[in-house]
Length: 97
Length: 130
Image 1: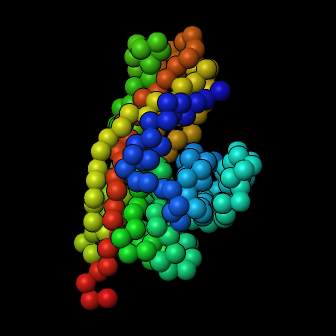
Image 2 (image 1 turned 90 degrees about the vertical axis):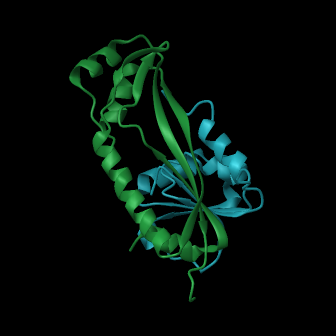
């Protein structure tokens, strides 16, 4: 079993610098959802994407049920991001650029 | 196309990119606070340098400005040393020596990996002339 950042150092630092509450957030290269639950619990909406379909499937599975209505998942690379202009307030790039 | 240009187009003016990257060339693997050895992530640092070049390019283009930069230490904990070895062996640009792999696999759990992580905030700005 692996606990990544069990103390939540990274999300705590992000939350201290960037209030996500009520924001429209991009989760760029979300992987298996390392920051997805953290962001979804605060943001108004979240668009989470990653080029690896297996990672997206895991991110969907691990997202708490009560947050699922706020998150839209997609499978594509950041270079293929195709969303309306000026739609998001914050882009989270957690180990993904 | 540089992904940061795509992201810039998706952000409202003044929007933020929160960029985190592991930046240690030699992150330590520890057991009970004692260092068992370090991973070799020098090749990965080349990837970070390439990302930094892309970021610098978009700053030069007037798309972003760096608002804040700081470093954290993020610790991953494994209840099985062999799992740590297997996991990091799949990481891009990362090597673990045979000697360290054997030490880690044989260590009593838990074992930890401490990574220096750079957190950077980029503010999306409107390029002049648009």
